[in-house]
Image 1 (cartoon, rainbow over the protein chains, first blue to last red):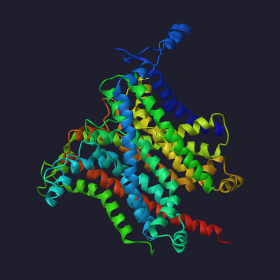
Image 2: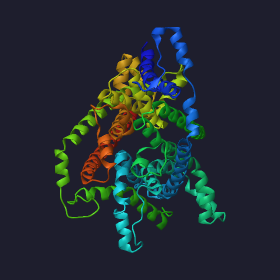
Image 3: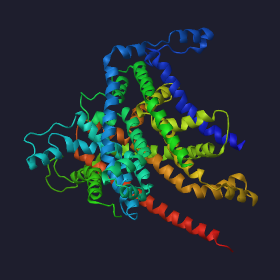
Image 4: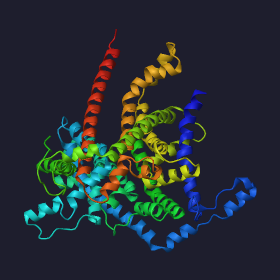
Amino acid sequence: MRRAFLIAVPYLWLVALFLIPFVIVFKISLSDVALARPPYMPQLDLSAGWDGVKSFFAELDFENFAFLTTDDLYWKAYLSSLRIALISTALTLLVGYPIAYAMARAAPEWRPTLLMLVILPFWTSFLIRVYAWMGILSNEGLLNQFLLWLGAIDTPLTILNTNTAVYIGVVYTYLPFMILPIYSALERMDDSLLEAAEDLGCSRLSAFWLVTVPLSKNGIIAGCFLVFIPVIGEFVIPSLLGGSGTLMIGKVLWEEFFSNRDWPVASAVAIILLLILIIPIILFQRNEQKQREAEG
Amino acid sequence: MKRFTWFNATALTLGFAFLYVPMIILIVYSFNSSKLVTVWAGFSTRWYGELLQNEEFLDAAWVTLKVAVMSSTIATVLGTMAALVLVRAGRFAGRTLFSGMIYAPLVMPEVITGLSLLLLFIGIGLERGVLTIVLAHTTFSMCYVSVVVSSRLVTFDRSLEEAALDLGCSPFEAFRLVTLPIIAPAVISGWLLAFTLSLDDLVIASFTTGPSATTLPIKIFSAVRLGVSPEINALSTLMIAVVTVGVIIASLVTKQAAIRQARDERMAERPA
């Protein structure tokens, strides 16, 4: 009885506020736009009994999905989200790995402080962290002022409202997600393995490539997925730092919904986005599982 | 420590500079007297004064706080229950679906969560406002809470609970007197996580709110879309300060609790 109650309460909550909303999104993605409130049809008319249900299902179709393939805005947005997510994940790895490496090599009494310094920005508002770059990257911004003062450039660089600014924003905000799993993999590494490699004639660099990198492989994979998966659907970074040329699917969905008020198409965009995400999510789960089994 | 080289020192310095310099610049420029955010014109607290008189921001801050307290508290209760189910309930019909529903929101893009909840609220005719944001925030943050709490429950020694039951506790008393104090640090960090997630959320709140309730992130987002403003810098500085103080206090408290618990455990292990 107590057990049933314990299971039922969170279960019902999630069914009502997580599962059912998805069924609704899926249903609306098969509906047509209508000049009505709510702006889509058909509506399920239960008062008409079985005929109502039948005619409801008869009117659902995959038209919106067909529409997504005809308008090249959508598949361009999907591809460009994937590309931006891929490039920025690689950049985050490039920036994050040396930091995680150095943290794992720092004196043990320093490590908790360093860890705290990596986590602290994560607790600060995401929106504020993205906003902080707007003042730095703009044409009159501090970065341009600094570069002009150095004499490195003669005319201000246009960085804000380009994809470059989006990459910088992603690396900045998602860096802790990359550092933490790599750090925890490197921290557990046995230093004597490196000594052994060097005793056997490896140079430091090849010992790094042959010993350290493979041993931190799981951390690297986890970190990359933790960055890649959320960046695909990212909305705040492209809309504040990106320009009109920055096409990302999260932004397209938002505009489809709020500006064009085309709910069926927005729902279809959401369904395809989910389908795209399922593959990396499954790969990520599998990696985590493998790691747990290796440890357990 | 022989491997701590110049390379490592440089990596740490540059890395932390990258993480912190943008925030420091933001904070410094919130004290700039000029309206032009990129030109330094002298020290002033003018923008803080204007901020405190800006009723829209104050209202939004109040709404945000209300939503965060309510949603994180409900999410902590539900998330802890869900963690108990995940770790202890064993097999039951629909268990796979249950754990799927716990983990899926963690990787779900916010735009999809927001869209789907909005369509639900419209579908059932629920008027959008504080209530709908609380429902939305509770739903995704309870999943984070349950992940945090279940990671603590996995290592929990159930014989302690059994001892309490043998000594005459009711199951609920055993939970309240034995289990809860031991998992309390995880429950508290779950609450804090849920609280910050709610404070921070722009996308889901934008979808699920109505005209009656504007949260701070929504307000900030619509303001910064037009560009950088010193008032937003001041607001950001205040938020950074609150978070920093909060995190430091929380880490001190958990450290104290860990020390106390270690001491208690040593006392318990000492042969009588």
